[in-house]
Image (cartoon, rainbow, N blue to C red; front, side):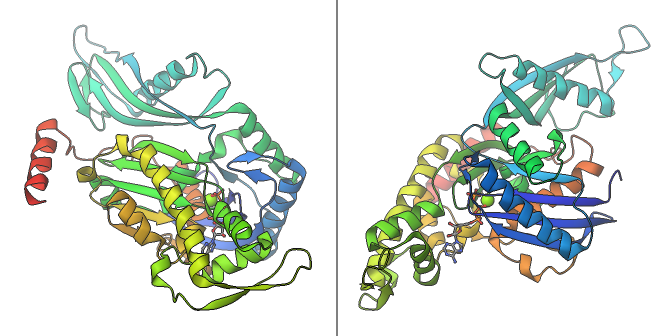
Length: 423
Ligand SMILES: Nc1ncnc2c1ncn2[C@@H]1O[C@H](COP(=O)(O)OP(=O)(O)OP(=O)(O)O)[C@@H](O)[C@H]1O
Ligand SMILES: [Mg+2]
C-alpha cells in the first residue's frame, strides 16, 4: 500500500464535500473527518468564480481536518461537465518470445502497455489535443485472432490488442479546478482527478448490478450524470446540464419568491407527482425583497416541480436511449445525488425509462468510524472517490473487467424474442 491517508473531495454545483480517511487494510477505511460547505462559483462542472469556489473548498477541507485532527493529504477530486469527451480505440503490441515462432507469455506490464498504446492513439486525434486523459477502461482484449478475452495476463500470443474506452477532460476546466484547490491552500496530483460517473459507481453499484447491466443516474444540483454499465464494464457516459438548481429556479419564478425560499419550499414540500398531493393544502410563500408574502397551494408547487422533472428526465432518456437495450440493463436504474431525495422522483423516472428504479445510498460496509451521517444518496460521490482512490493503490489495471460474456448476438436476439413474446 502506497499511502494510507486519503482525502476525497467532491466539488459539486451545490455542495463541496470532503472526507479524510485512513486505510486500515483488507480494503477497509476508517473515517477520520467529514467537512461540507455550500458551493459557489461552479456551474455544471465549469469554474465560474475561482475565488468564491476556492473559499468553499477551503471551508470543506478545513472542517474535515479539524474533525480528523490531521492535515488533508493525498487529495482525490471528481470532475464532470459538458467538456468530458469519450473515444473507443484500439491499442496494439507484439508479445516478445525467447523461442522463434512461438507465442510469448502476456504479463501485467504488457496489458498496461497495450492500454497505454490505445490511450496514446486517442490523444493524437484531431480535436483532442487540448484534452487530458482521465481514464482508459479496457473493454476486452484480442490475442491474435481470438476475440473477447477478458483478462489476457498469463495467456500466450504473438499480438495483443486492447479495445479501450478512453475518457478525456478538456485542459482548461481541469486546470482551473486544480488551481482552485491550490488557491484554497492544498495540492493535488493531476493524476488524482476522477470522473464523477466512475466515482459514483464505486459506491452504489454492486458486482451483480454491474454484470447484469444497469443505468446509474446521479442527479445533483447542476448536472445529471448518467452511466451505462453492461457485462461488468462502463460502456457509455453522458452529462446532462440540468438538475436540482433548475427546479429551484423554476419555483422561484413560478411562486415569485427568492431562490433561498424556493429551495426551502422544494425540500420541505416538494413532490414530483402533482396528483399525489392534497390539492387544497396551502403554504406560505415569502415575497421578494420585502414584498408581501402570499399563500400558494402545494399542488401548484408540485406542478412546477413535475414539469421540470419530466423535462429533465426526458432529456436524459433522449440522450441515452440509443446506447442501451432495456433487456440488457437487467438491474434497471440506480439513482443517487441530492435530487434523488425528491419525493416520487423515482416513480417519474421509472415511467420515463420504463425500467425499475432503486434509490441508492452509498455502500458503507467497508467503513469504520462515524458513518451514520453518510447514509445519504448525496454522499455517493465522495464515498465513491474514497473507494476509487483506495482501489487505485492496490488493484491491477484489468480488475473488474474479467467478467463472463453474456453478449453474443444470438443470445441477445433470443432474450429479446422471449421478452417480446411475454409482452
Ligand atoms: N429532500 C430533497 N428534495 C429535493 N431536492 C433535494 C433534497 N435535498 C437536496 N436536494 C437537492 O439536491 C441538490 C444537491 O445535490 P448534490 O449535493 O448531490 O449536488 P452537487 O453534487 O453539489 O451537484 P452536481 O453533482 O450537479 O455538481 C440541490 O439542488 C438540492 O436542492
Ligand atoms: Mg454531485
